[in-house]
Length: 157
Image (cartoon, rainbow, N blue to C red; front, side):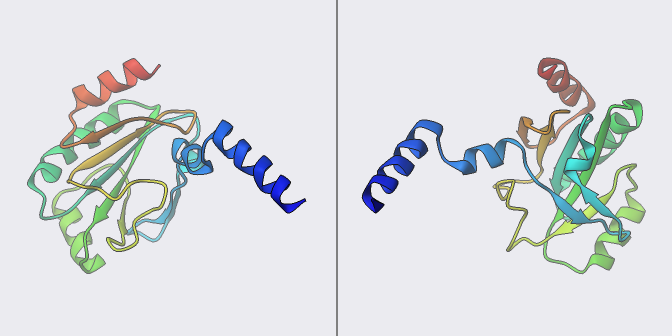
């Protein structure tokens, strides 16, 4: 009986693929922003969402922040979350953001335990564009621009 159950379960896994692939297609992200507010990616359903991994020491990250900010500001159907991927005190990140303001919230993520739904960045900046249905439409490694975000959204419609 147990062997038959295992055989059926294994066949189902082979035919449907691993459950992890489904979870990765609709990532779950719940973080607390630097201003203490919750950010839940699922609550953004119906909008395009830019999920941007960055660090204060990353020059390309700093260069792209105004572009992401302008893109979000100019597109009502787009929101963003910045994920500070570095092991530093949150007050230092707040001070950095005060000097480099953006229109979207920033959260700090643990470099040793990053959000499970996204791969740990292998380079910074790393940006995920989440479609209105909650799936990952595109992953960028390296800086994004207003133009590259616009093109990715146009192709994703």
